[in-house]
Image (cartoon, rainbow, N blue to C red):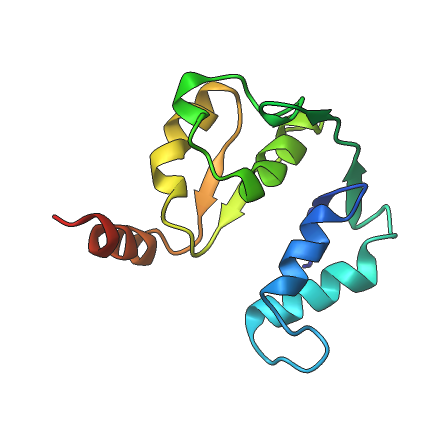
Length: 133
């Protein structure tokens, strides 16, 4: 990453999830390289901002928006929204593969949380296959 910063939670929930889906030590994919970079830079304040998250019994996190349209939002993915919402600059969330986020992007945007779809056409195609025409 040449510019900007990565935002993570202070209890490493995001980094731990990233490692469940990648192999940063021996993998050669772009996700592996990204996670390796995140692991190497997570303590570098010029590259990574850490955000403290407060747990919430119903929403998962205090900083996850209270919104009826987000009640079905995946529990494991709430940490990404909570981190973006808790950060002063509300950084954008980059989404590359999970098509369910398409349905939540508008509601998140109402709360000042922007989701950028890296390969939107691919995600829309995956979503159409899952949900039908």
